[in-house]
Structures are given as C-alpha cells and as structure tokens.
Image (cartoon, rainbow over all chains, first blue to last red; front, side, top):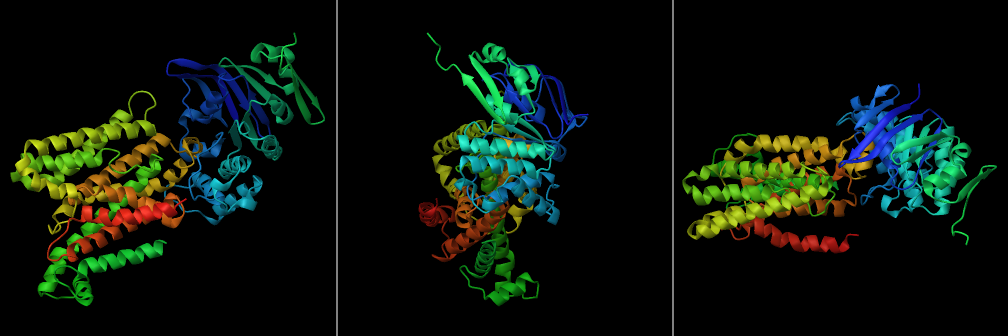
Length: 259
Length: 321
C-alpha cells in the first residue's frame, strides 16, 4: 500500500470545474513531479490531496486512512505542505519558525519536550539551515527562505513532503540547490511531491512525472517516456525536445518559429 | 522584558492602591489586602474604593491588550483593534441608548454595552462568514468597518436628537473608571475569563497563522477557525471592558505594538502575555495619575492616556524598523 492514493479527485471553485478527475500515487523514497501548463490544475490537485481544499468528488487515502476523516495532528503527521512563498513575520528567527512547525505534534497547551527540541535541531540540519538558525526570517534570501520552509515541513516528521512550485521565484543557483535538497530527502526515504514548471528540472530529479492537463492527470511515468516531443507540442504548444545525459538534462526549445 | 513588565505592573498596582485624594501608607494597604485587620478610614478607602477600582483597571487593561494582540495576529493587520470588529461601536451605542433614552435605568449601562458590543461582533462575523471567500481577512475588516460606521452614526444620531442629555454620555465615550465597587466585575467577570482562556488556547495557532494560511493548514490548523476564535475572544474581552470602563479603544490598538517593538519579536507566545501585563500596568498607572495630578478632581483617564501615550508611541515608531 502506498503512502498516498488518490482516485478521481474533482474540485469545483465558484462553479468552475478546476479538476475533473485526477489520480495520484506516492510511495516512500519516491520523488514525483507534477507538471502541466498554467491553469491545468497542478496546484489545485496537491492542495486537494493535502486537505487544504475540499474535493467535490473522489477518494483520497493517506496510508489507508480517508482524508475526510483526518483532522489536526493526524493530518500534520500524514503530510507536510510547503507553499511557494510564506509570509515573513517580523522578528521571528529561523529556529522559532521551525519550532512553530514542530508545534503541530503537540497537544493544545502542551509543552515542548527534549525530544521535540531534538526534532527541531534535526529538521534544521536535514534542510541545511543550522548555520543561520538564529537569524531573523526577514534577513534571508529567497533560496534560504525556501530551505527554511522545507525545514518547517520536516519538523512535522510526516513521511510525505509536498512542495508547490518551490523553485519558480528562485535564481538558477538557488533552484539547483533546492532541487538537490529535495532529491537528497527522497534518497533518504521521504516521499516528495513536487509541483514544478521547469520540465528540465523535473526530468533531472523526479523518479516519475505526472502530467496534468485540463483538470485531468493524463500521463504518469518515467520522465523520458512521458515528456515526449509529441506531448510537449500537444499540451504546451511548444516545439521542444527533452534530452538527458549523465544526470544533466536540457530542454531544446524552438523559441522563435523558423520562417 | 516580561520581568520588567511584571515590575511595572506591581508598581502601578501599589500606586493605584496607595495614592489618590487620600494617601494611604503602603504598609496599611498590604495589611488591608492580606486581611490583617484594620478598620479605620484608610482601611475603608482601600477595601471599598481603591481595591475594586484597581482590579477593574487591571482587568480592563489586560483585556484590551489581549484583544488587540489576538486580533492583530489573526487578521495579520497592524490596524486591527476591537474597533475593527465592531465591538467598540456596538458597546458605545448600547450604553448611550440607555443613558439617553432610558436615563432612569442607568444600572443597565454595562449590560447594554456588553450585549450590543457582542451583537455588533456577531453581525460582523455573520456577514464575513457568508458567501464567497468566507472568513477572509479582507471580508472581516470591511464588514467590521461598515458595522463601526453604522453604530457610530446611530450613536451620533441619538446624541444629536437629545442634546440636553448628551453630557451624561460624555464620560462613557471618553472612557474611565469609577468608584462603583465590585458591581461591574460581578456581571462581567465570566466574559473576561472566557475571552482570556480562549486567547490562551489561540497563542500557538496564531503563531502558525503568522506563517500564512497554507503553513497553518499544513500544521493541521484551520485558518478560518483560528480567525473566528480570535474574533470571539476579542469580542468578549472588549465588550466586557467597555461595559466597565467605556470606550478606551486606544489601549487595544497601541499596547501590542509597543510590546512588539520593545520586545523585538512578533511571536505570540511573547506578545499575548506581554500585552496583558502591559495593558494592565498602563491602565492602572494612567488611572492613578488621572486621579492624583489634580486631586480631588479626577481627569477622564481615556483622553488623558491618549494625550500621554501618543507621543511615546510615535517616538517608538520612529525607532522601529
């Protein structure tokens, strides 16, 4: 049994059908990239399976447990959701923010134990942010903040980390850094679900890619098998070809139509 | 920082009990409070007048500080205060309605302030939680401002229609404490207690909300429920405060900002308790000053506190990042 099993998920927002039937599976140690054009429903899909948006139809199970029946700490223990960019409250340090993440595991008014503080230290270390743990969030660069957001998710100690476009506001170096971190976490046994626009990045780090198009999951599998020139042309309306060689990937795009 | 606030609170409480038109030595104050006898006039003054008034000042100050802190946290808006969810406007209307239309029933003023304050907040949350995008910060703030305008207009209308009775309403609008004994607290203490308890449970959820709705939801909280809880807590606290001390809105707006600026952090685990201590110390201190500077004349503590507080606030604001 996988960690996540979603079947026929539909989401309607203000009368508009955003998701019309999406399936998703996720197993431990696997990095799955969700790709698709703007407005295809990628973010809506991961928000729906995370419990951030109520599906209008379909079934979502986390380790066999129905999402609809999950609340509070149980939900926090099942998955961590990392948004694209969180607001930065004044005067809050990296360690304090990760401690807030850890508080998801405490009872209301319950106190942090020694194990909880060790959990915070562990999350800081795994995300590689121990070096600036005492700095205020407001002083961090975009890439550093994204790592801190991942650390907040790791502090929940959930077996699944879901990141919604973590690299889309980052420069090349920071994007490489965050992509590498997510791959490392999957290699350590975490299941990672990554919403991403950059197809070359997806092909480089993902074990599987899931293509979302017009509210449906239309293909899933190994990047090279799924991201074919035919599909790039049909779905993204681009004349493009993906190449992969020794851990390096490239997307060859005809940016300007030849005349 | 918390230690400094506790010291300020103790000093303000001691001063409030000892100082006034009659100065009572602090030894006699302690004897009275600890129940170590005493039956002279000083004992009477402390036990029957100063102690209830001081406790009221502490409760009202703490309540307004906490109400402002949880609202500013829940709405992620530095301008949030009990005004913004309609409580102040509703409470003002309720009190003035009694003072103007039913002057014989003056004892009902606290009850009316409490009821209309809670009614206004209920209307705000009712509208903010209906239709699309329910429970969003923008909807709550806009519904609150609309309700504030409505009740303020109704209050002004009442005052203008009965100008000969307006003076009796002025003290309530200005805001201040009286020597009415334990009467006010006897009716309102459950509201202070419920609002304060709810605020204590909201500290951690509010810290999660400060990292955004998505992070709060990832951590298993429900952002709309946190905002609703904060609104209920603030409405209970601010309506109870208005029932006792009239309209002291400034305190709820400013105290949380001052403790954030002075403490250098917006972590709610610090801001909420520090706002309670700071608000209590500020109101007890200001009330003591208002009673003593021109004794036996009493200055209304509301405007007095604003006149002294605004320059301090602006000075802090200049230094803040």
